Image (cartoon, rainbow, N blue to C red; front, side, top):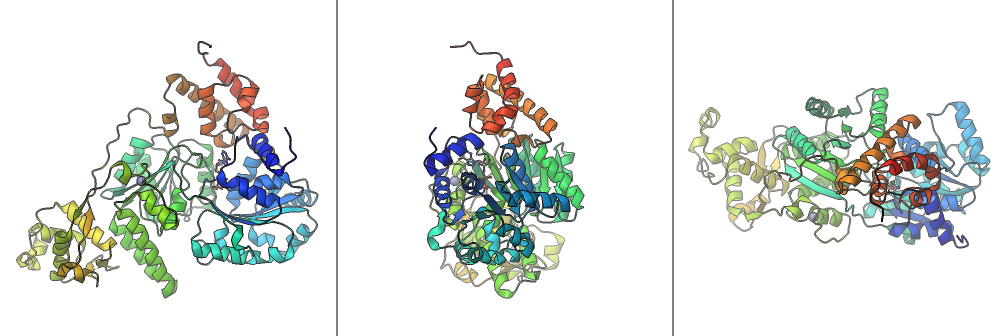
Length: 610
Ligand code: ADP
Ligand code: ZN
């Protein structure tokens, strides 16, 4: 194969080292640019394939690629995966002994490494800069580049010091990468890293293999359990909760129900957290219930679902968290239960935080966008992508597309609800108000004399859950505000036009919980295979992978992804040449693991050969 052109050179590396056939759309452009010595800021969704954008140019070029990464776990993961591919890679961070760090540094200076991962605070030390001045640096890659911006949701001051790279190493290309950056964050990154406007490459934000679902919360944990049992029994997944307490109780609940579930939050001992994370990577079918402390820095490609038991703070945060599902491109779920009590709790937290008023205001606005997403009757994907500035057709892979939500003219219902709030003195929560509307006579209502109100019993056209849904939607739409301490509702300015009849209101009808038609195994990877012979072979391949993973102390996916095993089961390669043609089988893995898998493939009862 000719390797004269950088283009064919990059393709050759993609095939030989990574075992993939073709670049994804933006990868080739970025790689060409960086390989030609120019800079880039790459915006691609999680799982979009950002790593190759700097790994391939580093392999094309002489010299060492320096990768700035904020998290030790992420560095370890990447380096291990690269070594499996036969790439000389190392990290230099505080987890190394002094002697090991010195060895790695020397290897870097000597040019014996192709990729070196460091934390930003180490990179900027005089000592490390001195090492770099003696190293042939191929490129700087700045991962999680949104950390540079105060506007972004994960600001890290040490990232701002990276500005000096442009001055100090003017001839070394810089490539910044992130999965989340709204307009303003993008500009911050460009400015701070000395990049130009035309260095920006924006990949589509869409993650077509993720199915988005939001359900109204009534018994969150039970709904979650039903969802997992119905759709993801035996799959790896992450469940996010807002509080540590919520994490503990949910993990216990799932474990009691027979799932392999474990808690993870910042209150647990570091050693416990590390062990949990290690198990999540190494085992199949583990469910981690976590606060948001979990997941950043985890590149596990076969996370089949991400569930939110409480609402996240913003669409950006939600998109990043859900993006951890299905990096391998196979079907995955982003599932959330939403009730407005969550939103209240979240607003309380925001209100009590140390942030200044302007920042708080911004946080509330971001939460409003998220609530709008929860209540939408449109395609969820359309709403998400519109938030990032992308247009999209209805996707047919979200709950509102698959089970269109009915909406109804709720003007009269809204008027009843709002005037009930008003007449009871704007000091009650939704449950009480619903009872008044329904004309439920209980002690509390009678004691207050609310059974004498004109709004008592005027809402019998709905059942209680529907009224709760009405109140929830009035809060989400801003007609009602919630007292953060008591959960009581009061009217906002926006309520007046509705009460006067000047404004119409539309509500969504909360759909009944979906009953799945699927029966038998709900292992999502398997649903890719329909032929029973393929399925059987897939199981055998997985079993082989499991034992190899144990033997080499590797996460199974670092041997081969599910997608690769699925392709093997379908095409049943029987020689090394055939196996090399399977997506995800590079040269090094072919040498190392090929024979073991060929044994399984050849032992499988052969089809009547053609
Ligand atoms: P990101 O860093 O953008 O979240 P990764 O770089 O981890 O994404 O890539 C996500 C997954 O997609 C990885 O498992 C990677 O091996 C795979 N991948 C990346 N590029 C390609 C490609 N051109 N063909 C096939 N798989 C790819
Ligand atoms: Zn849709």
